[in-house]
Image (spheres, one colour):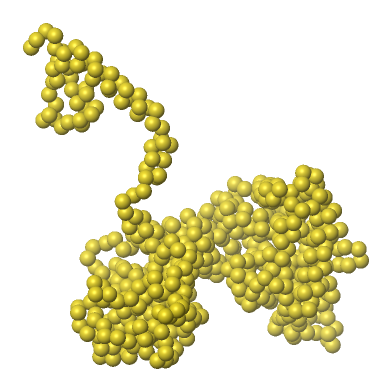
Length: 569
């Protein structure tokens, strides 16, 4: 070896070439070559240090991928699992006896007692809506001679030799709309109420989907389709068994699933109300997927009612335990303060005047003191929230759920606090969440009720249910007292206009406290229901007022109008 050459270990080879053991040989370089290679390596290492984690991530995220099928497939499958849980709740409630995933179709529901089976295809997209012509609902091509509807109807062959009530459903996270013009296709009639009758209707000759599909077609095996022979029904009869269902995007649909699970679990609790979180839903998804991972037995993809009941019970235990832990670590002050700060921040972000912000902040702190002093007597914010939601003095779910409900309550109740001279949680009622309110000589009861995802009719039934189950003294106070009752109705699906309803109870009020001629077997009380969005609209005017007095004038005008509308309706 020449003296002007240096034998070195394969440093550069290790750094740049990642050579394997068979290639790790000494490199012989002269002094100049060695220095040049060292400079290259130092510069390379320096560049690596300067290339930060954020830059590395940014470069990865900002470079368009060659294809996105994987992530689209994952998000679509996540939505499909949520739909499965949506129907899992129905199974526990007794409508189905088994649910199947990825067997014959995306989801299959069955009831062995009523001999009913429903095949469901789940479709998702990043778009909010699509024209029917942009989907494969009826499209048949030379390369793919089977449409979405064809795939659904093909399942009819499974039960072609027995008497089974067959149902077919296309469940999408986007709305399929009609196509107009020369290629007109109207499919809006296929969106029907979510009941069994929606799978049993008549399709006529002018139905656009029927006309599109009533052409020569072949199944997956290349056989010409003769519906009556192969599927046991005519094409018209099969189309009459199809329903399209639209639910909103996954980010919002998961709230619906959470609420359905929450309502189901709370029905089974002897005492207490718990909240199901997104983390709980994802836990349930993991449990479902674990049941689809074993061996060659195809029935592992099936979940029977007994298994579902066990899963829901495990979820219930999990939620109750989390509730207890959360209740121990959060007190009244923390939760109320978070709600006050959140409302104050919302007002500030509306570009409200500094003077107005200062006055509102002072009023909020006064309301905070009133609320906390009331809570300290009962020592339970959980009691407050449970009366808000269920009319019961029991504990609720995790702190995140409690916080969102207390935020909602404080936002609307603060408006009421501003316009009444007296506004206190009533001590006469243990279940109904009623406030004694007074302005001048006028006394009112202001109650707050959260209907969850229930519509107005179910919300009214919920309020009636609270009254029916309440103690006699409380019931007498409510029904016989002439004080007008206004209920601020919270919830996702309640109607927007105020209305007047009649609450009644069929429970006998015969009691020694009443003279015989005044004993009642059926009593009623008129209640004005005011959906909360009508109350919270006043916050939209925050950027247009100079003082809290001006803000209160707006609230009083609003309240007088809402009371009048409620009384008229």
